[in-house]
Length: 259
Image (cartoon, rainbow, N blue to C red; front, side, top):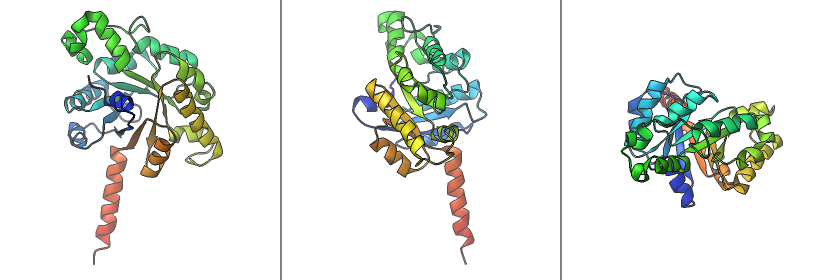
């Protein structure tokens, strides 16, 4: 398991990914031919089930990229199945309390840090991976260190406790969801609003102060550049359906101008 997000961070480099909402191995295969580091398999906003996510995780890893899953709920089953399928990182939406943060650690990290259930699965090559050179205990320690648990800071409630969340052992970073965060703060889509900028700055500082990653979504390169310049370590840029829609919309506009 080569986690490109961690590898880039260790080298002081930003990592870049993109969201996928299509039930398509062809799309993942195509994206893997680009220089993106990871793909976020979006089970929150797309009609992706566990079987489909499992296939996309396997293909992403097979192509040498890092599979990331945005789960659809703060639930043990959603967390455990994505990890067992081999996700290098989980993005967890709509965090609002420290109890939820502590439960995420409990479900996602092996003992002694958490209480993740053990079974030989893909993330450890069913017990045959190099992580098992030191036995089960070695694999558990490796998984705890190399599997990232990244709650989304996209609510007012999360912003209010962001320092505590970032300080919690087992939480590896935070992901800024700008759309829902701006809505939750009463400034939908206004990423220049002072209240939004303050929330983002507070999240970045909380991550930096605790040696954690700060990741975020950007729908354009200007916002991505701003985030990287302000201390973000990773950007998930765009999503496949939106980028396809934009490309085809631009194409048909040009075609209709042909005379």
